[in-house]
Image 1 (cartoon, rainbow, N blue to C red):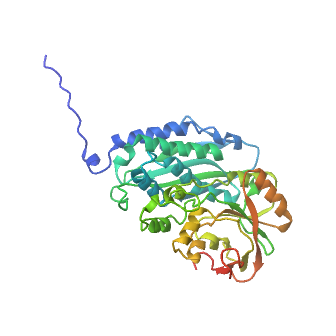
Image 2: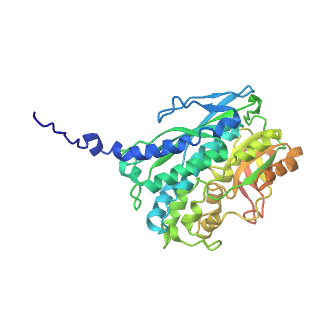
Image 3: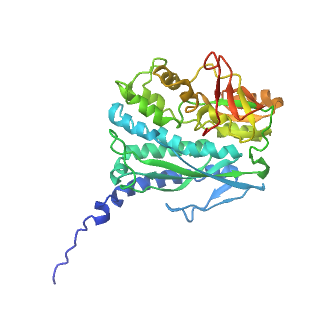
Length: 387
């Protein structure tokens, strides 16, 4: 009888063209494994994940709570922040990947947008799109990213039941000296229950006070400007900051702060919230978010701005650029009637946030008016976002 010979399967042309599923599959399995550990996190909000159809391509879930409810969905990308993580991984010599913090950043970009509608996060699906399949091979980096996703899911009460990890050689090219950095993004689904907790911003009116909750630092807005300025420093991201001795890279990679507990505490205490606003793109200019004819007068601010922003000012970034690019310490804004200022600050404090009453909505042209003495001796007027 003739001996049966097995033919070794060589890598196909698709793999040689840049999409090698053998390299990507371990990453996918690592993400699925950690995702399964998050499935019960939304149960406290009455949302349950069906494990019968759990796989990498989608999720089935249902609401079993007692309230009439609405669903809310947001999609957001991280931007360029993980480019800094890749730079630090290769040049800082710390042995860290920094991707545990990057996982937190990526998810919170969408979560902090979602809660502005009064929704609480319950489902998160991520996309990690790399320029080559080799990026997925690093087990430590993959584990760190998965750990970051798990941490933020546990923190805010949502599940990670599905995701996507494509290799996009012809679309994603990293700027040297970083050889490869993926595009990170995700979609979060939230529930508004009871449905009357929906916040649209239409209740905003003249006389409302503006409360600011402190940020943890850069979060993920203005990163391109930080990279541009860092790369012309002699030590680049290893430059020591004079005000806290962190390196520039370490300071830039401090994870984004979640404001879910703050918003949830206000909703539970039935604060009459007129509007919520994440302190993301456009810096303090974004405070003038509403298209109606209101002026937003900023009359106080935090005693100190985060060290990274002070460093940007010190190396020559203009005050106007900093105020319209960075959050300058204000991570989230709440607009409500003056009668609720003191009680809301106390609610925020008990929830673990440093929050202050920074200003008032007044009649006038749409702009942000910052009082003299806060950032400079003369004061400053910021146009609304995009103008």
